[in-house]
Length: 271
Image 1 (cartoon, rainbow, N blue to C red):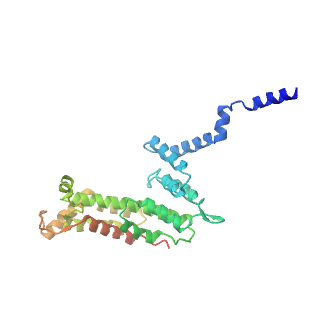
Image 2 (image 1 turned 135 degrees about the vertical axis):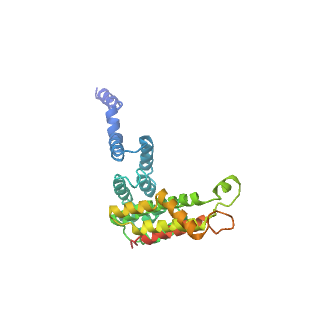
Image 3 (image 1 turned 180 degrees about the vertical axis):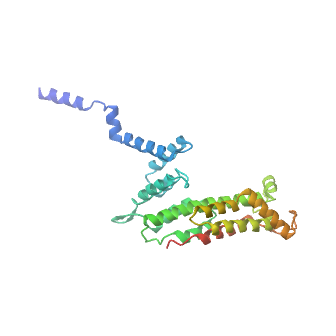
């Protein structure tokens, strides 16, 4: 009799769990609520791509640096929600094991994250920024230092890309290089125009302060009309009114290097 009751009890215990029980056991409901809250908070242009990036970051359990980087990419650094993403990335990296009984962010972990952010920047240029904002391997990276380094790296990354785009606009050999296989990709933009463009970049960077007026003035110095006027004046003063092959040129690497130095001069060391 007791055996029958025992058998009946076992059958009852083996009943399939309900949908609600499944969601609670796997914590899926909680994760869905969290990601929906992030979608509403960040308001991405492509919500589906945002969700894909988010779950890719959550699913990458083996590399917290990659997860932190993916979290930072969820929103452009100019958006208010990016500040929350920095906090989330910091919390992810804070779980890294840096010692036998200690977790947190040290200079090594911080450096790996900066390398990911700057991976599309030429290595020799990226190294110059990292030397200014990175911490020593054994140092504990506090949040304020972490935030400043992350924001600076994202701004620098975009600055370099914009500098490259500016050079491409001045490069008279670009169409030729694109048409001829194996042709040099270093460029040969007119040096007079390159020097004028670099001077405007220097003016924009050095005159930008914390006040809104200086930001507007810096933006004006780089607007198309102002650049066109600057280029025209530079060509007139140099007597170089055409782009002949015999005139002095500047290569892309040199232009980007000088543009980077202008930015780096403004960056304060975090050490």
